[in-house]
Image (cartoon, rainbow, N blue to C red; front, side, top):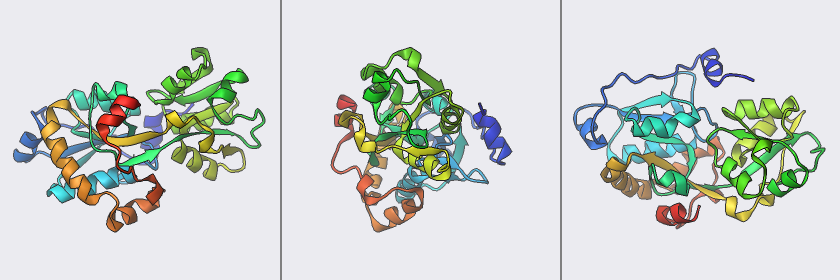
Length: 279
């Protein structure tokens, strides 16, 4: 199983370590000339680092457009593991987290989420031909199959809610390890956001395929938001006002098209408060 940090380093992607002193609310940091530390993991196409550590992916693209609408362009990308984003945010090492993070009730207790930036569902990757006929959680449970997903992913609680035993849920750092577990036969199916499942299946079409995401339960469809510290609610409100001017515009859709985000992924009129209460 590959180590995410080793993969990033081998690809020439530096793992950023901020040296800025821990500061107060984000507006105070900005007034003091500090950068806005944008935290994300290697989770394409949601958010990931480029060859020179530049923030790529549609979540980063939308965040940067909204920040520019606010007049902010002093942005420092900070790459971390998926599981380190919320702890890093609340410890004051990060100012905003992107990463394609679903707005979920348990996360809303610890994160001040922006307005939704998109609506998405999860999917499965399975060996070519789908020999066990797995299309959703019910199939995994009925077949006693082993699924693999990412540590900290919403799919862990979703699988348990659908009755899958904890012993049949393998947790690994991220997409690279999910793919490796399925290819090696250690897991019967990988469960992850459908955009990632589709990307992996496209690149590994000889051995892997993605199942139809509409076979997953309706309640598992989720909205993505950007995360802020609770004490930065004033900044988050200003950010949301800027985001409202950006989301769905031709310029925004053009910027995210290369990251597989399409008009059908727009969040609609759904509000963060409703998502926090219902997901």
